Image (cartoon, rainbow, N blue to C red; front, side, top):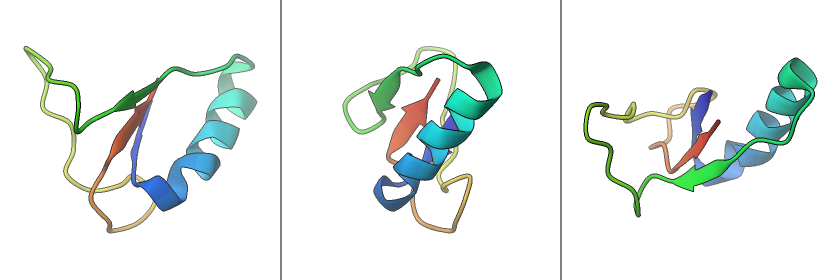
Length: 55
């Protein structure tokens, strides 16, 4: 699972496929609320705000 900004989404997709050998789901964090989980505020690959969850 990766929380990433828009510029880093391609990198996250590639890593996910390499690691799990399956296509991920991509969730827009601006449009989705989670009941028991707060997503990280920063991208897993840089310092930009996280905008997508790749899972």
